[in-house]
Length: 384
View 1 (cartoon, rainbow, N blue to C red):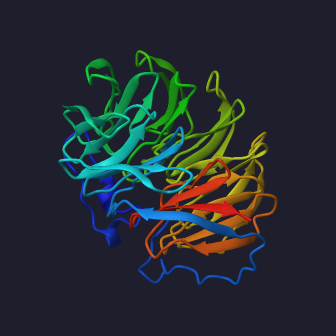
View 2: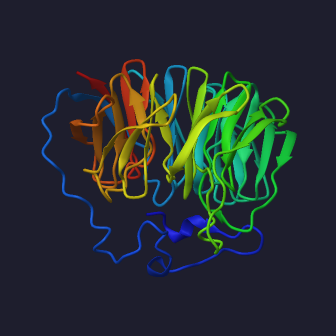
């Protein structure tokens, strides 16, 4: 269930509602309804062998994602730790203390690494961990930045996209979205493609493509449309990072729909009613997502037909998914990482990363699986 702290009325003031009163449609009962399912016995058909692990500090209530650039992993914590970690050994190449607490980050292209404070200050560091510049963007930022094509792309909570020069911090462009009466107060994921564009979701059930060089809107298309009478019922933002496989993009909205379309134009091939705030992952023929009940579902990419559904993790609050090889990986609120067969949804493996929630998607890189928990543990695993 999404915390009520994730709801903001951008047009005027923060909307505060009690959890019991709100319940977000999917969670209409009391705490007993939200009791996480007991773990079923799983005979591991493969193992994720630990290669290395380290800690960067707790993300607390925020959702920090590590990012890989070149041969390094960049990770941060709410208290302001920012580290560059060698991808092969797990040794910290450098670690700095950002002057303020962080809300999100980092973003990096391997040359410039940025992290953003809870006050909207953007701090940039060079490849040796030395400060380059810092600027204030005039708004809270909950979306992880993208560093690509010599531009740092910042998405502010007030619906502005800001392009900063990666070397100097000077503003290159700004793209302003119309504010919605009510939007989810969460980070909106941005998917960079070829250092040229980003694909991201918007409030009101839409997603689109933005040029990194100048902030121009390339295309925009609706995934879903608001339904219901109250503003809460009509929430249907596309908050999670869209996924892409080949030339097919897929996106999902909260209280709305899931759909896939052509990356070049954004034209949808199909869509169907569904609701998720943890996003999608794709293989060649399937798109995967989990709803608010943590039901994990696979749809056929070509037409949206449901291939399978697994309900064994009900209310375990699974995080963002990763499709890799023949399995689908996702963590849960108790620090477990679950592996599903992409073919039929069977649970084929499970490991315990640590005891804190895993909300960020695992990363597959160089034969390794990288996982960061909200407790701050980041580790690399090798599938065996």
